[in-house]
Length: 392
Ligand code: TGC
Ligand code: FAD
Image (cartoon, rainbow, N blue to C red):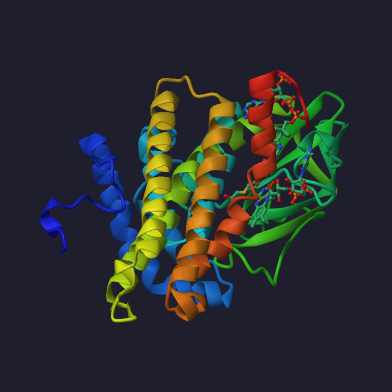
């Protein structure tokens, strides 16, 4: 006997997280969901196949206020932490590459300029970035090892009133399409942030080709060879590793929400597929072994949603800590990757086809679980929090 659909819970939101949202938060979620349904989903698989970031969507993202959405002033929308999370969730339901673009622009470029920049830097960059007229990238990782940014080789030395930068950055989202790069470099005083504009002599970006993951996103290598930057382009408000790490805290928060969207897309498609696929005389979904796997996915998504919701409330109250963010980034990325892989399997041969979303999400999530701190880095961060002992 089947249960009437009227009495059933939303399978992608079993604990009614949406019911916890304010009217404004629901409006933001709905408007981003519409954008994803109308403009992202129809083109994204082809973009992935063609290894192309759909840059034509940037004005649409900007028009909805999604760039620097939680910043105040400078033409930014000033939305709350839950809105930022919901934006990431809906965008990543479309593709991790689109969410990546927004994460980098908002949390990794606009946030440091807003938080650590001079008034002149804020005026010069933020409104154009909010309008999508200027794209940013964030250069922290270096070719010799991204997990340990304290061991940075890229350096900047004072020369007269300027700074001269030398070094290289690797795996940089948006790098080759960015008009401005936030480059973190070692100085005599410690790590500092430099705003390096496209076209500055000695500064080059090259696209990393042949990726199996995040193919609808631009990933680049950056090269700095005697790049001269004026003092006016140094972020005055922070010195030390806490500068870039505080930006990562913002972006990791968004990822903890974003990957829920990828997992929901996989489960949603799998529920439809398993209801109509008939094997051994009954729907695939009518097998106990299959229902257990579906239930497991719903449990994991629900747990991730509740975790993200509480993290958002802590953030809104100004109480969120980096270790709490690490737990959510680790848990939710692992959850989404496991679900994407299992959904791919339950689609059988169809699971490897571009007609279905899980394999694309699965491949993307291999990057998402690696960037912004690998799973191991977040586990060790929790370990340090629990024991007080640094095992890095
Ligand atoms: P540690 O001693 O822990 O900290 C150094 C200083 O930083 C402070 N701090 C933080 N501040 C703000 N937010 C955080 N999350 C912070 N974590 C630490 C800390 O208090 C200290 O301050 P102070 O004043 O005492 O100096 O540093 P450590 O060298 O032991 O490193 C810790 C570790 C391993 C956790 C850190 O290096 C790390 O997170 N490594 C992973 C690197 C990473 O995540 N890279 C990401 C690159 S960007 C990217 O991937 C973008 S993908 C974008 C996309 O496409 O979406
Ligand atoms: P490594 O640091 O060399 O790590 C290799 C392995 O060793 C990992 O499994 C790691 O978990 C493990 N490991 C490291 N330390 C320990 C330890 N102490 N104990 C046990 N295991 C350990 N970076 C940016 O700065 N800006 C960007 O915009 C950006 N975008 C990215 C986009 C994509 C698509 C990708 C894939 C990466 C991006 N990154 C970016 C880089 C990303 O942050 C790094 O890849 C990540 O931090 C890991 O660094 P790594 O690749 O050098 O691996």
